[in-house]
Length: 161
Image (cartoon, rainbow, N blue to C red; front, side, top):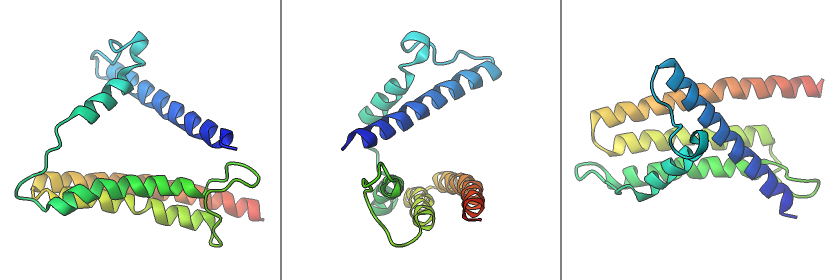
């Protein structure tokens, strides 16, 4: 029963890791610098090294900022992305959340919360550069969502006809 879910999640995870690995190698070639080839064979373990570094980093909360906004912002961004997986049908009768509303509109609504979390983190630091970084990350996230939503909507309309 869990095999389709595990297969899908592992497939997506491996796909993302390969895309990040290719992007780093191509960027290194374009910028004429050394890429991530020293972490394991051909740099395959670079993502594991990045994750370990992220987990072991010092948790720094600015003393002059709003600690609640600064701490809750990343949680909101991550939770909204995980909630968007709840509408994916993993099998014939295996759906995590059977919603009576349109799956597409639920997915768009949930995934649109992530930029708010990014903006909250930047604003909560009480630093103008961090706030500008949060604005930039939010704008980048929104700019990726709009074409994807339009593409999915146009495909949906073609299927309906």
